[in-house]
Image (cartoon, rainbow, N blue to C red):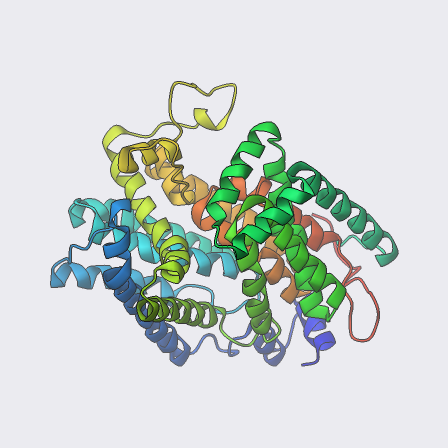
Length: 478
């Protein structure tokens, strides 16, 4: 299909009273007309097995020896217990969404690869809890992931009226908002300080010094945290995605420069990593017939393997710490911490989320876990929706936060149904990456998910050789 035909088929599938032919649906959904083939599931199982093997190799050779002080340990379970763990790891492959026909598939697969798998394996290797106790965590995780997977592929989407915004209106307004945000950012951090931070990195300094300065700055300007979240997870990714998707170099360069500015102020490596992440993801989303799960799993497997090989060859831990430990293993370990700790003392309730109900004498769960397992309440062990849900309300909290997340991705899918599917996936990439270590409500407000959805809803999309053109003007409001 040409890009225009591909988008047309996608839009037709979303319109009431219209339907795609079996061949069109196969091309749009990325699956055979009769469903996902057994061969594809076999490939997914194989690649998942290789991914788990790569994780265990890195865990054994580098993570435990170098980061054991963080709570990583290696206590190999018995053969029967290991068989159970591997079975729990593989089961979701049978029902996870296979294509990117709905952008929320990216969220589901990311949670599977960076939270679910490691929450099944790492606590069993690191904690002293018997496997029988861990079953109380593992089975709810499977059910929660299954619910998200069903919402990402099953329920009928809302019919959302598409607002038509002229490019002559959208782009000047967007430019003004972006420039104002950048000016506030530079003014808050002072240009000389930002330039000095960048120069210091080339002289051997590390990003943790920048983060310390940023933490002090947040005490003076609390709203700066919200501003950097919108820029780094929504506005700049949109510029980069627009540039990559529609070959607009100015937008791509503006997005990259913006992320560098955010990094110089905050020291957050995720701002720089997003540049590479979006570029690699863009290679996939322009070809929707490929399996999203296969691409993501293969990509993470290669990243884990490469970081382990490079670090062992150079006698270093930088890449393994950044990719394998921080991005993949830590969400699983922290989930185990939350489950072990709050299964002993009971859930804390929802009061600490609201300033008017908060007891300042009590530690919030991230700080309490930091104190309980690392001896320092200033270490904020931020966790994912399932760990935080368990801390707040026990097992009902895990399902409650899953339902809330399912609602959010269903709304996003409904908005995306009449938009360019590639842009919808690219705009969701950074909010999806934050779900593995923060609450869905925080991702929505602080980390740019709401802003990304609004931009997707309002932004005009170029088609073929036209300079700009809204993707659809037809629809029925909810």
